[in-house]
Amino acid sequence: MKWLESGESMEYDVIVIGGGPSGLMAAIAAGEKGARVLLIDKGSKLGRKLAISGGRRCNVTNRLPIEEIIKHIPGNGKFLYSAFSIFSNEDIIKFFEGLGVALKEEDHGRMFPVSNKAQSVVDALLSQLEKLHVNVFKNCAAEEVMYDQHHVSAVLLKDGQTISAKAVVLAVGGKSVPQTGSTGDGYAWAEKAGHTITELFPTEVPITSNEPFIVNKTLQGLSLRDIKLSVLNPKGKPIITHQMDMLFTHFGISGPAVLRSSQFVVKAMKKWNLQEVTMSLDALPEKTEEGLFQEIVKLIKAEPKKSIKNTLKGLLPERYLLFLFDQSEIDPAEQGGSISHEKIRRFAKHCKQFQFRVNGTLPIEKAFVTGGGVSVKEVDPKTMASKLMPGLYFCGEILDIHGYTGGYNITAALVTGRLAGTNAALYSKNDRA
Image 1: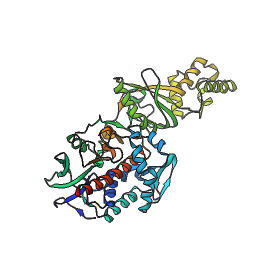
Image 2: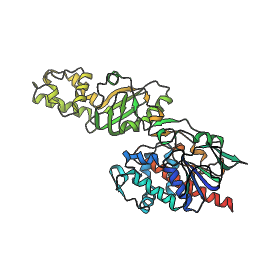
Image 3: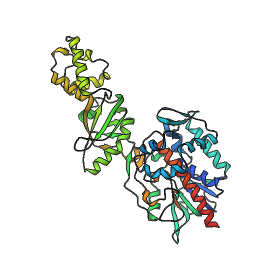
């Protein structure tokens, strides 16, 4: 692979803009079809998002059945059915193993390199680009995609150079994690081709709250394991519930259950025009409220003179136990036998459904994933081709597709990248012929 600095002018079959997961896969797929490929990235390193993903271990895909994977991509996951029938998560595993990256399966189907190093995944992709003679411009920003007579014609670089191409793949990401180069550049290029950009919003992002216990940092730094967290509609019914871990922070809440709930908070605020949304926390999902009440009453009866704090020691993490005592107006030093059943019931209810208000999320730049993007209604699900502009292809996070963390977004990026690159190459060959 010739690592070119911009300044050399050529014509290519396919130009891929963006060196993230989907762009690297698109450039490889196009190269495998024998196309003359140029990969352009405005950064000094390719695969920056991959290199920091999965805690720098890179969760390359997920091995759950396709149906399950699509359930874990609540943002237009069904659009990917056709794509998965052509290049699936199992194909991703075979692809990486073919590049010499041994993978291992961890909890919930998550696939990681045996090396536990994201860089080994990035290096394998870069080696494949080199093997396929894909040209690369690094430190090279695209200014705009040029269209001529209703076809893709070229890419104009910020330095004024124009590079001709039969097909262009937009793999520039969304607006989240901007330090990796995802700053929303591609939306204007897509709009110029006639595409609709659906409203952008943060997903997989911490949630903010002005509740007194958050503002006063009462629970800051406290982690709760395997809890159930629900986002409620204005009638108090759950819109979504996730059973995972969570963390209280100085601005609100975070952790896996919270990240997965975040897009539903954003959507509820918009749908019902709300300033705040109610969430409900079940700290003991394996118990029923009545069963918990009876269990506490039994423990108190056995040792009525024991302080309630000592009677219920170990039921919940101590800070959370004391917090719920306070919410239930129970003095932790009080003897269990002198506490009214009404207060015990209130405490049991708080254990099972402690409700609090949240007022939004951190901004899109702090999110792991961008919600919204190029409308999937305007993209062919089998080829990732624009339905509006011949020669234009989309892949990865620029599309209005978003999933939970756990290998789902990267799976969508790699699958759409594979299809976009393959079909951009086939289109350019037909165009040449």
